Amino acid sequence: MLTYTLQKNSSDPLYISLYKCLRNDIRSGFLHAGERLPSKRAFAVNLGISVITVENAYERLCDEGYVFSMPKRGYYVSDLKNFKKNNETVSVLKDIVKQDAGSGKFLADFSSNECDPEAFPFSVWSHLMRQVLNERRNQLLMNSPGSGLWELREAVAQHLKAYHGMKVLPEQVVIGAGTEYLMGRLIELLGFDLTYASEDPGYERIAWIFKSHGVKHLGINLDEYGLSERELELTDAQVVHISPSHQFPTGIVMPVSRRYELLGWASAKQGRYIIEDDYDSEYRITGRPLSTLQSIDAEGKVIYMNTFTKTLASTMRVSYMVLPLKLCTSFEKKLSFYSCTVSNFEQYALAAFLKSGAFETHLNRMRRLLAKKRDSLLSLIEKSKLHAKCKIENQSNGLHFLLRVDTAYTDDECVQRALSCGVKIVPLSKFRRIEKNDEHAFVIGYSAVKLTDMPQAVKALEYALL
Image (cartoon, rainbow, N blue to C red):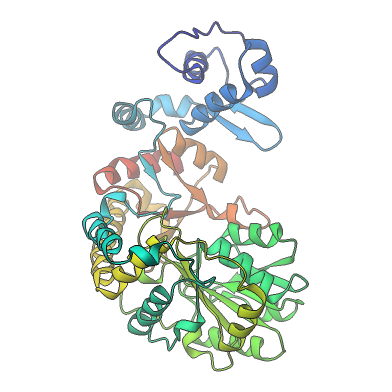
């Protein structure tokens, strides 16, 4: 068992002291590549410290690529031989250490589709908040209807008409604190005895939501046009969740022919519905916004969902769904006892933000910034060693694209090599029910990466993937 003397009165937290001890032993070769580290509990007992201290030290080592974890098997020392031989990577790592010493931050997190916090319209937002405080004092202290304030529901309906050409009544709009919350209410509305389906590969949190609510859930495979209607028809699914305008994680845009096929599936039997998740449609960089599935639905079979989390900030937990008219009455009868989970203050400010035109201005500015980031990243990849070994797919829509790479490494090895350079990537295989570790495709989200960090990040990708 490894034993270290940790100085509890040191200026460093205990987990940092342990992290440094382990890192030094890995660098010196005392701990060999592939060697298993002690279990967190046994190590904590041996050192006389808490399990969380050991866990934090291990996670820090994982983040920097010194060790890697295997589910239910523990932590193992990474192979650093290639890292030591690669001068470019060493240079990248030195710069990372200088920039973020002790912070645990990434040079570039390509697994994220959050937007740069510096792009948030703080001045406009703070002005609107002061205005709400001055003009809405009494309303701020009144209970909001369960579906949300009328002002915000009306503003959302107007935005959808102007942006997507959707004919939506404010009565159809339901406001909630995040898509996860609204999905829970929707399951409660439609029924726990139904079978729910979603895309595979797909946004894993959707599957978690279905599982947490105890409903039967199926994953439906994708083809080149998106979710397969033929495979869906072979199941007993009654409700299907899709993201047709920009599928996550593949980026596929579903053609109108497939959309009509799915509408036909929904109309064929009573009680079938399609949940259309339009999570980043506002960030379509090339061309006009795509028509939504809801806008061509003549039978009232589509439940539309969107969020302000992607367009404003990840901490802005305001989402909404648009119910077909025939479900509005059922929602009111069954679920109106729920309180709205978004504060009046936030709802009034967001309504003013939408109605004043500030949201449209913000979106236009963000699209220009994201186009600049995307073009810069694609240009750097084209000029790098990656160009001859990779293929880029679906780069014209939303906040991410796919990078397919011809590499001798496994997906997990690529992820760990990237982490050793301070770069976080996630393989497409992780979003499948059954992982395909031989396809070597990575979901590259560029919205959270600073323009100034992209050259170093691409060098790190070169090392990690080739």
